[in-house]
Image 1 (tube, rainbow, N blue to C red):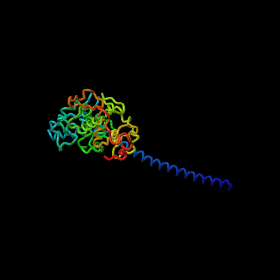
Image 2: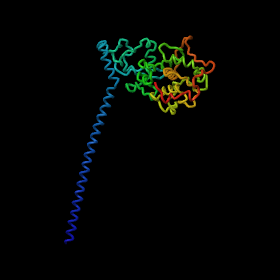
Image 3: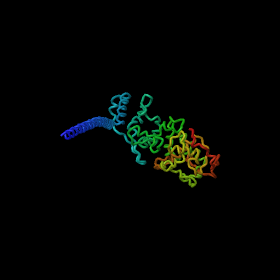
Image 4: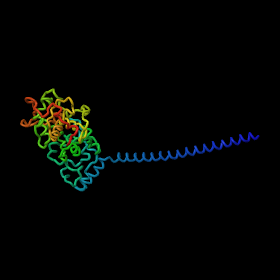
Amino acid sequence: MSIGRGTDQKFQGDFRVTNMDNITEEKEIKDHYKSDSKWIYALLVVLLILTAIAFHRDATPQWEQYQAQFRQILTQKFGKKAADSFSYGVKQIWIKDVNKIDRCTTCHIGIDIPKLSGEDVPLVFRAHPNPELIKEHPFNKFGCTYCHGGKGYALTVKEAHFSKPAGWEDIFLSERLAKRYGFPDYKNLPLVEMNCNTCHLREKEVAGLTYINKAKKLFTEKMCTCCHTFYQYKADVGPDLTYEGDKPNDLYDFSNITNWGVLPPSVFSWHFLHFKAPYLVTPLSLMPNFNFKDQEIRSLAMLVLSFKNIPERFVVKPDPKNVFQPECVGSVPAAPGSFTRAGVGSGVKNTKM
C-alpha cells in the first residue's frame, strides 16, 4: 500500500509539472499571437495608407494640379472669363513622320502665349523665350522633345525630364546635364544644338549654333572623311559615322574606360574621352590624337551624336553657298603624337573639365 501511494503521489507531481508546462507554453503562444497580431494590424494600416495614397494620386494626377494652377494664372492675368474658357485634359501632339508623341504642353500650357512672359510667371507656364524661332518651328509640326529631348509621352515631371547621365535615349537636354558635361554656358541649353543639327546637317553654318558650327569646321579641317564614311564620302579605315547618333548604347565598348574622372558615364562621355585620347578608349584605334581643347571636344561629340536618319521633309535644304562638304583632300593632316601610345597621353584616366 505504501508503494502504491508513493507511486500515486509521484504521478500527481509529474502531472502538476506537465500541467504547469502546458500552461506556460499556452501563455507563450498567446503572447506570440498578440505580438504577431500587432505587427499584422500595423502592416494592414500601412497597406491601407499606401492604397489611399495611390488612389489619391490616380484621382489627382500631377498634370491636373499644374492645370489648376494655370487656371489661377489666367484669372490673375486675363480675368475669370479667360480662365473659364480653359479646358482641362491631356494635350497631345503626334509627329507622324517620326512617330513621336509629345504631351509636354499638358503642363507647359502657356508656351505659345506671348503675354505669359516675365519673371512673375512660373517657369512651367512661361511663353517660349524665342518667339521668332517658334514661328519657324511650330509646335504642331515639331512638338517639344524633337528639340529639347525628354520623354514626350510622360505625364510626370520626373519621367518627362529624365536626364540620368547613365542613359541617353530620350534624355532631357537640361541645364543641369549641360553643367555636368562642363559647358560654361549651360544656362543657354547648349546640348539642344545636337537636335538642331539633325535637321540642319547639310548647312555649313547655322545662326545660333556656336558649338555645331565650330565642330563642322574641325570635321572639315581634320578631313575626317578620309577615314570615316559619311553619306557620299566613302572610307573604310574607321567606323561609318553617317548615323552615329542612332547607334544603340549597347554597341559601345565601355570596358577600357577605367576612370571617368568628373564625367558621368554615358555615350556623350564616351565620345568626349575618345576624342581626347582615342587609343585609351579603343586600344586598336588608328585615330590620331589631335590634342583638341575641351570645348572643341564637346562640340565634336555633339556633332557626331547629331548624325541621325530622319525623314527627308525635316532636312533643311542649304543655300548653295552654305553647303557642308567635309571632303577628303590629299592626305590626313598630321597631328602631334599621331598613332603613338605616347602621343595619346593619359587624359582618359584623369580627365578635367
